Length: 513
Image 1 (tube, rainbow, N blue to C red):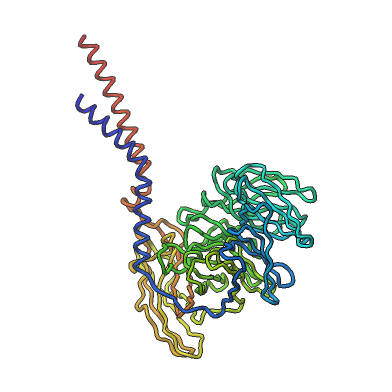
Image 2: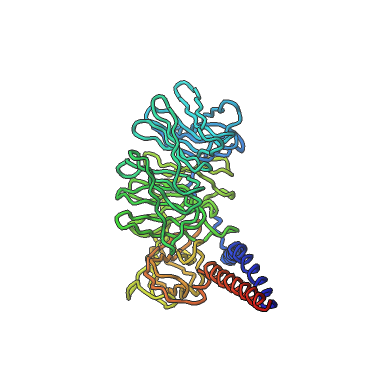
């Protein structure tokens, strides 16, 4: 009887552990990352003169998204003020249009082939609005599913309007010219679809699922969804932004992490391009909406790092430019104008900003491996990093590291060690830095990215390279990854033991009687 009572107590405790351990692990992990981010704090305080800022007439308007229109004109939404805004680049002037009802919460927008502006409204049950600039007339289309939180809007070549319904787990369609509404439910429950992009042939729509960590493709003809999940070595942390390049490859931003991720469709492989580690109180850079220019470069705002980033996949170089305003830049949708200049909104600074297409960081970094790029987890691999100064004056450069070894980009000196972290480069000069890269012993097999960060004044460059890691069996790591299964097995064994002992006891009592 004593043994049975002990097994019963242990059984209850194990069930309790199965329910609470995931939360406990998550909390301790986040605290550890946050503490690490604080210890690596560095400041980039000088202003970036290349960024131009245009203050919006309405105070605290909450600019949230911006698009480029013909004739150097831009449209944007004012999330807090409940207005639609227009900006004229020729003379830097504004016009604002209050949305009828004075209760709207506009979130994102698009322009159709007829020049109409469409925007999502998250107030109340949720709506899609059309604004005709020629007449200043607003038309409202409530979503079929109430409280669906409509967000991103896309317009096809037939002037049909597509939009995501984040909390309804659907995408919606308004069909031109009558604008009848239809909704389509994504296959994964509570996926929270956020942003969309056209496939290269425009026969399907790509969608980010911010809660499932997947991306989905919706076929316009069959109305079927196909979902893509990254390997376990590269989990997508709250994917938000999405664009498709000229080869049909899909690029996604990690708003819950610190990277831009590429899906190569030809072989269904994922690659991660990490940003620099944030220089503030946040453990992640929170990469937001992506825009791709005519050169194939990806532009984005890093919400928590307060930077504009630009990734050039042809050179594996990511350049980052500090935003002058002290508040965090927030931009649900960014834009590129006809000249390739990048435009974004600053929610906290109450402005829309421009950074020219030809801006560049004065320092470049290139990572080169002398003996191949394959290693085993726990074993070092060596690289030489060329750091170059493109200016005609000397520069002081601070070096740092980032990688896809963690979702935050935070990388310890045990994982990537540099022989120096500070350089004084001569005008047009360069230096070579040695790097020892040792993947975690618990890392599973896969392709990982490593980045060497060179920061100078108000900008930085991340030179990114990829290594192939062969994982080793690690008992502690295996137990940590499979603890829930192990606990369930133990619970089953204990339950079976308890049942067996109970039956044996009853049988013994029957025989004794």
